[in-house]
Image (cartoon, rainbow over all chains, first blue to last red; front, side):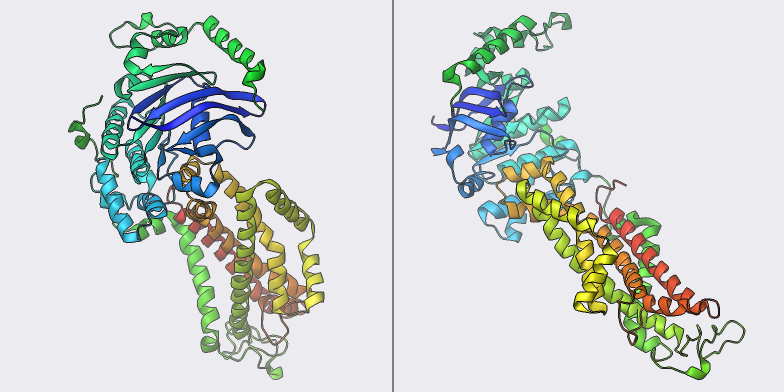
Length: 291
Length: 303
């Protein structure tokens, strides 16, 4: 397998606060990699850096993001925009707010097809209907005519998934796509993503805080905390033989059906404080503060 | 790994179950009574303006000094030839009202559209680019709004001369800020929305983003503003007539009629009252229409 995405020693700061402290991560072609972390670990910032959506006061201090052999951070805008939506796509977190409320589903789906594949309006609409059928939406022709508010959350998420896979991307970033959905819909969405991944031979970077989801669909995983990757490896290895104390604590804090709720242990405060202290100590080292 | 099982197909009928028989009907019903009343008043205004030469009983400029200051025909002393009476020069008030409607519509359409185009352009640029461009445009608007509008109009009329052109110019010059401010604020708000971020991630250029994602969201707002602005334009024409910088005497306008009628308000009150009624009705009409359209055009139905 060859790497489709390589993130190498990425440092990002917002103002004077470091949010990513030397993240390195590789996504192999066609694999599903989980990126696990609590709130504030830097998961979203990593995604934003990839898509060039960092807030105005954020700076990439060091590091390199290589996507299909190209240096994403130093690519001219024009070229970067032609990659987004075509070779790298995003499944956004919240299906309720990620579709434009005043545009019909068809218009939103065809926009990306016409932009990147240069399809005619008619061809794009036909393709859009096929894409909706692929995400198991019945009567796709009718759904193309609907506004987002006329659909359920699960349907909207499926439309967003259809948009993500519309141009046969090499990499799809799934940014907690199941977080805003209830459990029954979550399962369908996961199945769908898995099926489309196989059909389009895409790699997926699955960002989540749900270890259960990771266990189900990810081949490999990285554990992110305070902007650092604490542990990575094949999912089976990391979940059964975690090396890092934080990963072990995270696993102990995950609810499981086969264990009583009392067995749940919160991640120890001492551990968290130790990790943050370490992160801040690293911030002060000259080697961790590239210009 | 997940098994791609058949239960996916069982659960995919989450679409809105109700049929959508006629989108137009639902759009119109959402506007409610405001839309209908406003629409009726504005339609009436447009029809009268369009057909004034055909339906007016007299030439609006034709003077008949022997039958000056006749009261409306349905009151005592009225003449059936002049349904709403005559003014101080014996001109038919009804005909003058009808031809004034043309002036009003002309001013409203041209002035409001020009103000909208200029204001929307500035607002979009300021909102979309942000930074120093936004600062520049916003400060310009602030300074602009600090000038008293009537004074600005008088200065303008002094420069380019009295007449309808200077009325329109005055409205555009003063009121583009109304559009620019609102559009700028809404564009900024739209840029922070998830769906705009999601669109950027699809690789849309800045132009496509503005055109496809942001502008459609501004349509209800712009339509409302436009309609209200047309009402305002009619009012401004009246004000500028009053200070004597609107159309000359041979082009009837409600403002001009009010100004003329004021001198005879005790002897012949209808000469002043009737154009006032027309102005009020049209302004209310435009405001109701704008309000109704805003509700009707918003597919999410947040009212």
